[in-house]
Image (cartoon, rainbow, N blue to C red; front, side):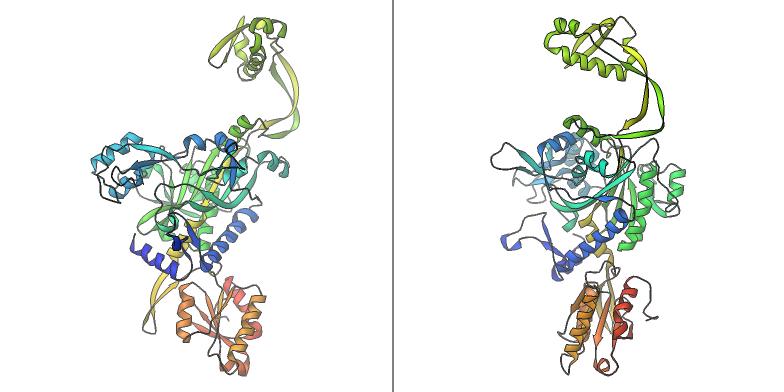
Length: 579
C-alpha cells in the first residue's frame, strides 16, 4: 500500500469514514462498513449526483432489487462472459488475479485484455511467485472465474438467482414499462443508485476493489438516426484526454482540448459520450476531485466489451496509480435486443412519422396444404422462417426455389408455394430499438478519491495539522458548535445555537470536550468547513465566532444572522470576509 493509502486508511478508521466489516469475527475481504462520517459523505455525494445527472438532465430514477432471476443474466451474457483471470498457488491454495500479478510486477497495463495463454507466459517469463507464500507460479494454469454471487430464490434449488453484478440490468429488463412512462418518446434517460456484487478474486486497496459496492448508473436511450445532444452547454469545457492512439505511441502523452474540439477532431467519436464527459468533468470538480490528478482514458480495442463501439474511463491518480472511477460507454442496442430475444417481449419504441409513408413491403402467405404433408411437424417453423427471410432478404425469393435453415438443417421450398409478394402499404411509423449511452459511476471509489484528494497537511500555531479540504457541500458535518467552556451558561447557549442550526437543516456536531484548539483539529480532520464558538462576548452582544477550516480565519457574526450566513458560505454565495 502506498504512503497515501496508509495515511488514508488510518484516518478513515480512526475518524469513522470506512473500515473493514465484521472485524470482531476476523472480517471478510472485500466488504467495508461506512462509519458515521463516511455514510454522510457518501449520501452527500449521491445527492449531488442525482442533482446533476437526474434532476438537471430531466431523467427518471428507479430502484430495482439486488437479487434477480437467472434468466436475466442468461440473456445479458453474464453467465457466460462475466469472468476474471485466476491463477491458484500449488502450495498454499491461495487464488490470485493473474492480470494484477503481472501488472504489479511489470510496466504493463490493461493485462486483462490479453489472451489467457499470453498471461500465463508472462507469469513464467517474469518468475512471478505467490504473494501469500512465495511459491513459483510458472506453469500454473490461468483460467477464467465467473464473478457472480449465486443464490436460490425461495426454498429448494428450483429457482436460481444471482446478486446483480451491475445495476444496469435492473433498468434494461423494465424497459417495456419505462418506455410507457416516457410516453414512447426518445431520447429519455433512466438512472439508478444501488448496490452491486462481484465475487472478486483478490479484493485490495481498500474501497478500490471490493465485493459489495454502490453504483450510480444512467442508461440514456437514444435514436441513433435522429437524436443528438446539445453540446453548447459543454463545448468549452476543457478535458484532459488519453486517447488510444497516444497509449500505443511510445512517446504518447495526455492531450488537452475542449469538448467541442474533441468532437470536431474525432478524438471522441460519439457526441453523446462527449456530452457526458463535459458534464461529468464539471461535476467531478464540484465534489472535490483534484483536476491535477484526473484524466479521461479511452479503452483500447482489446478492452472494449464485445457490444461497445467506444468507451472512456474517468481515472483519478491515487497513491501513484491511475484508478477508474467512472466509465462512459456506448452499449449500442445489445442489451435491449438480447432481452427481447430471450423474453419474447417488445423492447422497441414505436416512432410516429410526421406524415404516413407508402412503402413496398415483402410478405409471404405459405401454402400450409403443401408444407404440412411435405415437412410434417416442422412446417410451422418453416413458415415462420420464410416470413423472417422475406423481411430481411426478399431477393432470396427471385428464383424458383428458396432455402431456409433450421438448427443447421436446410429446407427448400418452391417459391410459388410461399405466397411471396411485394405489396404497397401505408405506414404511420416504425419500431426503433434505441441505442444506450451509459455513464456508470463507482460511488465507493469516488468517496475514496474525494477523501484522498482532500487530505492536506499544514502548520497552525507551530503545530502540524491534518485536515480534509472537502467542498462544503460534500462535508459530512457542515458546522461544529463549541462553548468556550461548559460553565456560566455558555454550554446552555451553545446547545441552543446548535439546535437552531439543526432546525435550519444543517448537519451539526456539538463538542465541549478538551481545549478549543483540540476541538478545532478534530473537526478539521473530518472536513467540517465551519466552526462556531460561543464565548463570553456571546452572552453580552449575542454574536459568535465563525472559523473557516482551510484558512483558519475567524469573524464575529450575530446569532440571528448565523444560519443564513453559514448557508451562504456553504453555497459559495458569500465569503468569510463579507460575513
